[in-house]
Length: 255
Image (cartoon, rainbow, N blue to C red):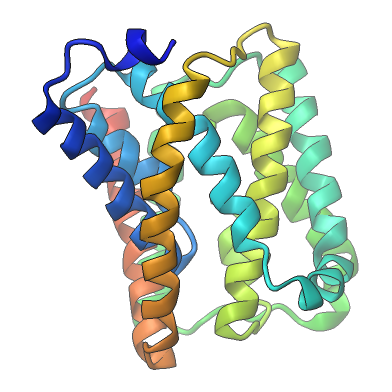
């Protein structure tokens, strides 16, 4: 599978593929998201989308698991957002059974518009704040909606990320919470695809190789994040969401 996926690429193109994963890992290390979107956008320039997706499987899952650190604060965070994660799993599996495999440009456009609107509002308007007393019932509801959208589109950012940001978490707590949510979403999506006979392990060897540059980039990004002032981190985070939203909307409308 490794030779099938990478055959025909010159050393220069292979270097570009590695550079894409380093860049995507760097962005994920700084703001906690963006590895699949950035990788797919850039890799699709010189390879088929199916090949790009095959390369993403292991780097996406492993970097999400890595993002759930540190271990000492993992259990308290799971207690706080565990209901949301149960909703994510249930919503994804229910959506997979009802909707089938992820498809539909309209869904990507809707997600993109929602991300753009949320990012612009938070950058220039009043930030959203969720009262602590509502987390018990709102978290599972947000999780279920996120899961259903994940089943329809393969994207697990909305409304999970806006909700998590509205909880008033500190910078590293937000990164960890997103890592937990993305990990649950990735596993649930894989299960949903398996239910629809749409999941294959293809190109495991190549995907493992691309894990190395992704982890290197993510490690550098995490160190860079520690040196960013909170206000700068917030702007980077929201601008990243804005870019993801524009990309999703443009892809759905133009391709």
